[in-house]
Image 1 (cartoon, rainbow, N blue to C red):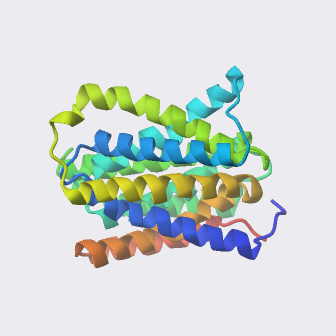
Image 2: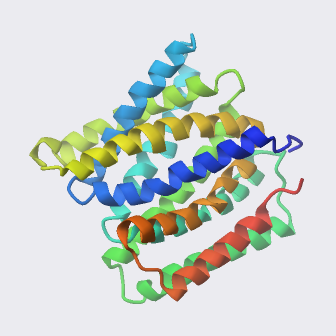
Length: 293
């Protein structure tokens, strides 16, 4: 793409990285006393209300045509409800820092999908090398645990990786659907769909009224709903049409590093040499696939 990195866009990208990277630690806190689906539905519900209030304040309304709601549904499911649930479930078995590092694969999947669906973002040897390095980092993280079979940690890591693929698909869909005049409406509509996809399943599977959340879980729900979901979605949906799916996905250059940092600082998690090596490989892969200016 030919759009330049304005200072405002760069600042928003850093803010987005902070909001997303802290979410892994708060998810870990939340799933300590509530189910992953309950946590997901709570954050989606809070974000839905806030995003709808925002578009009404700006004088927008949600459209009524079927095509718009079909796109809202796709993005809501693939970009919010499904990955949020997968990440929350995965963190039942793995540390938040490891989850953040695994999420660093998202730009790799985005680069591949952007090549397939968006002509503006070509695939070349540089992108191929970055993709290969990205999957090499996954093998480094997942391989030793996978030798022992489908244990909880392996399934947890696999859930995080699947959520990263979901985000890559979502970023490409948003690049196709979003326009500078409707980014906030798209965010709000997608959140409506995400919440109503998530709520019925949560009520049936986890029966939230039977749970006993700790005060820390309520705090996690509020932060995830307001910061990591509502505000982060507004920023992300704003940046996608300006910077493109591939370049916007570079936010995950910062997310693995910051996510691992928050895990150590807030939750006293430990980082092994293997995790640090995989993190380095992911960062190199993301740097390699970064679009040329």
